[in-house]
Image (tube, helix red, strand yellow):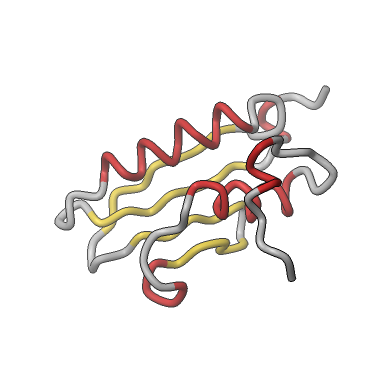
Length: 100
């Protein structure tokens, strides 16, 4: 198993003025619970300007302004999984995935 510092970091940038800290914390907990042995951590970064963006390393996986609001947690988990552990099953979250 790689050292934790060698694992990908998810960054959640959230607008403080919009009071989105609790939403960011909830996503953080869900991602840490799901990707316990995969992620190096989930970093919360206070921002402004109605920002809510989720990044895996340098890749933006969700941007509230361009992707339309906030992601459903199953969608966010799939987006993160596809980058950090593409072969990992998400269990019941997989069943909720819409057909292409």
